[in-house]
Image 1 (cartoon, rainbow, N blue to C red):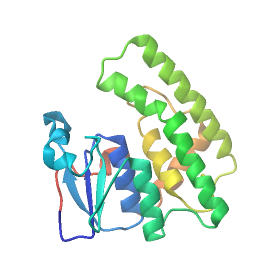
Image 2 (image 1 turned 90 degrees about the vertical axis):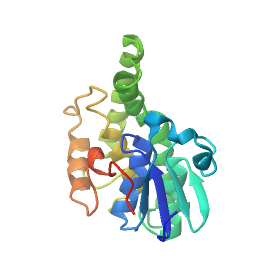
Image 3 (image 1 turned 135 degrees about the vertical axis):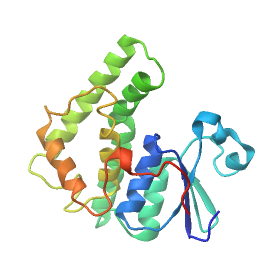
Image 4 (image 1 turned 120 degrees about the horizontal axis):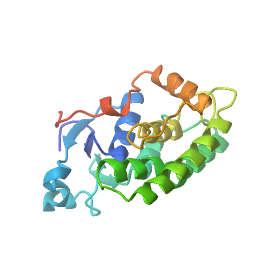
Length: 208
């Protein structure tokens, strides 16, 4: 724990960790960062299990309250700080719909990346995940026709989550060029204060 109000536990290669880190950066919420070394099994240490019972990253401790699962964290932080959650009630509902869609459909990009980079996946499994990823990208590309962001005129946690997951495309060996609306949206996101490519979201070591 630190003297800051919020502590984030994560790993720079973890897409869920990067989703939370990006939200905090874009919302300008100060936080202390604690690197959890997944390669040495630090996520299974008793002291970390006391924070995250699922032995995964990320986890957040906010005013003494422990929260895990990245999309739950995004929702909670948006509500707690009143940032990136959408405008009126309908927008907030739409944000949560897209967040669930991201975790279901778009997440195939992260699955494909994992199979290729970390799990030596079978070729037919990778091909299936890449196909599902392309289907999801097509849905988002159609939705983004005309510009703007996923919900409303400003970025929300739906954009944060989708942007981070789409950052997996190179690792998933997927070329984004067929989806010009997605590419234009990525450019709009990167123009926002605090936004960055996935490799630049989190530090490589703990930071007070």
